[in-house]
Image (cartoon, rainbow, N blue to C red; front, side, top):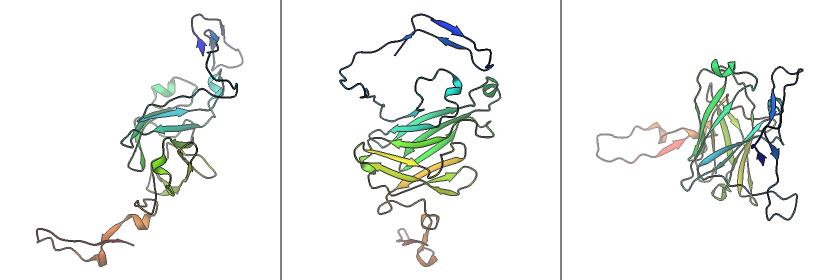
Length: 230
């Protein structure tokens, strides 16, 4: 934990025109009941929220985190919903903010989908880090998920994602084999168990029509229609 009670030093390295680092206080240790020094203090994520994690140990400069991908961790509430925002920029200058050259999104998790809403429509390209993985905690209800995919922003082209359930941690993690998830390029993510859920990752099976293309008789008060997919 950092003690911000006083400014220790200010350092502006001549070799780097982007940084001017100040040390505000000293690192202090907190007393806990943890016996093993390699053990970690448990943290809690409010139900219904999404946190952004960037695995960097004690970063000192902005450049320490520029090339580090992020992880989205979501803890759905009792309705199965979680929501959170993600802000990404190049990390160098204020002009990117003034010119709208940054990424800003809202993510909503509900009904076996992760929907992305663009909050800064001035961004013309990706400028920030990518997403290594998306983790859903307390995911016992999603233990049997066996399909996941990502729809492209500029089309509805689907890219397969890998869903991995960890029975010990009770988490469901989505990753892209051989790559990372580009938040700028993605539209939505769909997932589920194809034994009980509509598989939105199979384009042919995601569209239904009346059986044998027979039009229903809509002149009656009630009508039974049998649907089928191709």
